[in-house]
Image 1 (cartoon, rainbow over the protein chains, first blue to last red):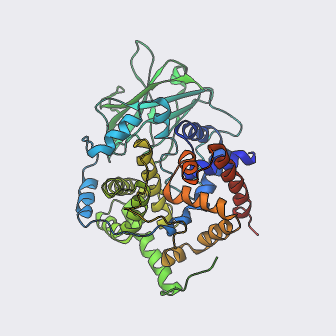
Image 2: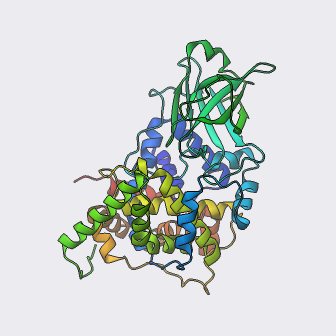
Image 3: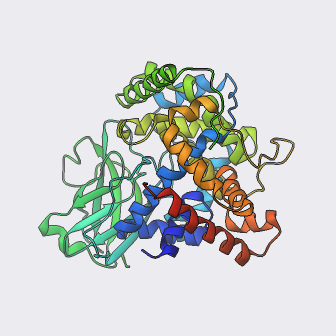
Length: 236
Length: 196
């Protein structure tokens, strides 16, 4: 870690970077454990400044609106302009990666590093875009980093699966049936260890997809719920 | 860092933090009543963050709703030993508001009609005491910087602006802005990571 790397981590936390730089820095968090730890340090150091924001009471009408919102696990309907704008911003791949990796840094102190063995870089990457008609609150593009030899696939949080359902990751080679790679974690970055028999699918050109399944995964061995995100594996 | 005089005792503040932590942990167990308590305890703080970064009330309300829905979903991942509850919540609010700004293609933030320019927001003394050590440290370390460096970092943090916007506000070339801030960050890190 050079001083510039450390400064970059701070720039990411502060939000100073432009979209492309931010996407690159977030992607780096997936593959570089030291960098991810540095980001977590800056987050922990800087966020206490949050006490400096002046308070402002929200309008009373918001409370019932929010209480209702948590009762509807995943309203498909987008609300007002902002969700629409967010959808548009996700068009470019760079922007898709932006929506993702660390997601909101929802833990502050040194986070469990979402990283592979030290010094090892993922050879393959994929960005899974939300599929048409499946936009929902809490759901965004997913970044995927793959270590084919180890059979490890890491997926950023944000599949936006309702409570008591599971997100299942599938690999689909051209003209073949989907093969399950495993379930995504309900929270945080997922680390999926792919069954040995499916590791041959961890290669460039294979499509990855995430479907919503009953808790514990598809009972049939094939996707049974909607595919909410998909993308193609590319060399990193 | 000068500590403002406090109206509440340390014991009361510790008790408040305990209540907040409890509400957040219970929320993680999908307890709606706890979530509502948490909302009432923290929504003014989080709305302040959203309003400041979004720069308009309607957007800030929408973002605040997103924030609390996310809090409801993610509270189970909160680890009390790791971060103070208010810092954890503020992180979600700030990041969500920053995402909104990016999705807007960077509409200019904080028209003066909505919010006054606050170069150095006065800290919320009670909240700061809930997180006293970490707050004191970052405050102290910012004080070690030159005024211009400090101002740039504060603006970036509180207003959620990018380098490009920061350079425009300060009326300096982008490259100059970046080198001012990078030097400041490297110096700041030296202070922040100094455990002595």
